[in-house]
Amino acid sequence: QVQLRESGGGLVQAGGSLRLSCTASGVISSAVNALGWHRQAPGKQRELVALSDGDRITTYADSVKGRFTISRDSTKKVSLQMNNLKPEDTAVYYCYLQRSTGPDVWGRGTQVTVSS
Image (cartoon, rainbow, N blue to C red; front, top):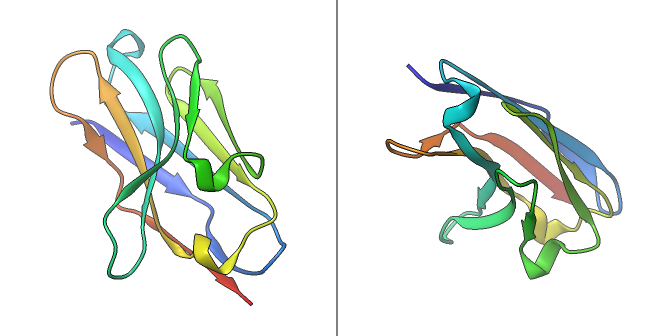
């Protein structure tokens, strides 16, 4: 069974930084296509934050460009460095794994709260 273990998150003041990490287990490296992060704020739809694909090409939401950096630490581990956090970044952040075959996998989520 494929599982994603997330760590990081928490409460920080505006302008502060946090780092999220996610490690996949139960999947072979060659089956991992992309790893990344989505987030969902209360009353809003889940949205892509950042993604690192198999060629290490990265994609970012416009709202986080220049502030967030995604790094693919290994084939099965991804981190998200979040700097200059804003209250509107408050959300539950979900690790996401796209497999070459089979359904996508989601982590359980970790709360990020940014106070003004």
